[in-house]
Length: 480
Image (cartoon, rainbow, N blue to C red; front, top):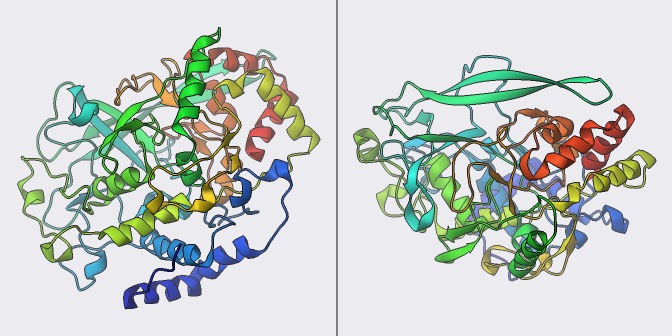
């Protein structure tokens, strides 16, 4: 890949980034650590990284031109957008409605967002946890049908002169249970709602789906898993006895302009990283692009429709080249190496993981192929044996986790198998370890206890484990 000629703005951004933490990002990939084969979660892309920046490194095998592009994309990912009109024409256009001012506002350190504190009333609008909205029926291209007043997600912030759409409410129910050895446990079951709606009541059939921002490591590698291999794995599951029957989601992609296999999002409702990023820019920050040129103002929101637009109102608020750099940045974020894979407790936990049949959905490894949109990825991602522990398929996870909200082919009880790589580093990067789609689980073990439906047999196997076995299982998962 040839180097990108720097514009004056890009030169300043790159210099500022390198002066702050860009040098750290590049240094880690050039240290040249030799990783054992069982540590290489992302093949040759893997970096040896722990601590606060563990999810912020570029793939270890990028060339110099790609590292420059990574740094530029990182700067636009992290920095705040501002209201229009502004002298900062390359970064204006925030809102009119929004939930965050930057990509990094939700994905802090390219990691997992923090959900609200379930022990306290909501005092501030949640940033990293958003509420998806839809009503019964089929929307554009077979996707969810948006609410006619509030569209497809609640925006909890607005620029001056525009009313905030509404506020999020939260109630929490505590559930009690015991492991078979008598050890008690508690689970938290949150319920989210809407209040203070500025534009009137939503549709009576409104469905609400909370969604927590996930860590972004290895996204380009997941995108490069051959579609045929994912479908073949689904067919193999369907042919085998037992409850595990993963299903591919079929979704519309704005860049390919056709239906594709869903890979990203909690319900595998997005096919490509390009679509995911562009949709998040307009939905979460209010920044339009070539593929998503319209603000998410609905016909009843006159103040939103009349608000100033960025880029001097002459076109998309983020240009194609800058958007491409942000997509590339996320595509080449490296998965960190495993920690202590040969530790006896980790090995014991791995055996327990296999015995509980967790790998039926959390498939350990894949080999990557071509990226579906190569202009936003790197050839360095191809041909890598990776260990994300996911099948990228939809599974019925039972009534306890169900949000009742369909999304393309996903039912209200189905969820995509989330990758497990990097789970043990979320605490270091984001100062919490709240898992699942709404952050209800306080760590790996609670996440397992919420498994039902197709995964109920695995949950029951974990309930039978003693304290030492449970600790080993958790340590294995956190080593990935």
